[in-house]
Image (cartoon, rainbow, N blue to C red; front, side, top):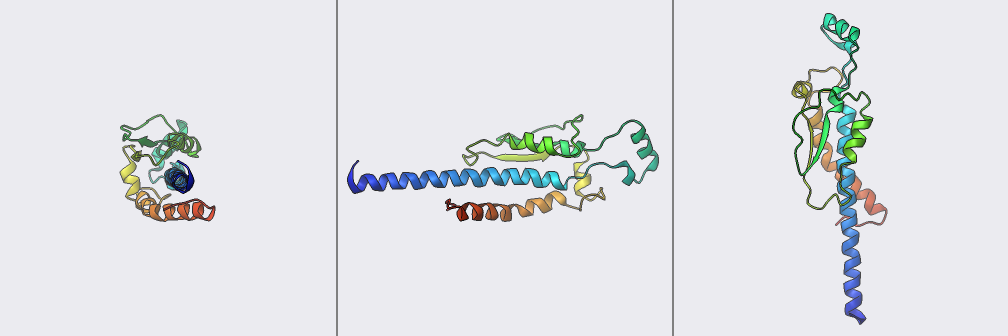
Amino acid sequence: MSGKNGELVFSLTQRIEGIKRSMNRVTYEAVATMVTRLDEVSPVGDPKLWQDKKKAEAAVKNGYVGGQFRGNWQLGVNEKPAGWLPGKIDPSGASTVAENISKIPKMASRGYVYYLVNNTPYGIALEEGHSTQSPHAFVYRIKREFNGIVRNIAAQIKSEGGRTK
């Protein structure tokens, strides 16, 4: 097309592509932030804090290293991860976060369903306050942050000249 109609089509196409890029960025950054936040609040086993001192001493003697809960955060894209990873230990959480973020597709907002799960058999006990290292309902608290996270990301993109509506 040429003339004004062609310019209108081109202008609309550019705007729509800009909105799609912004949506992908909001989705990508929101999922990545949730992955990171859940890792940050996840407790790491520390035998010095255990109530059962005999069990703690035995664990230390046997080379216990905490970090299994952190290492078991799993991101699924369109499929909920099943099972837990009994030998996966990540005290800092860095490799688990990087692994999960690498699973987020480039076109992150294109109809994907994201699942962030921790299938360790003691995860519910931790969420219910079993650990002194994390607050009661720490996963629920992060879940409640989600809308604010998305608003902040969208505001950042808008401040950079991107479109979020």
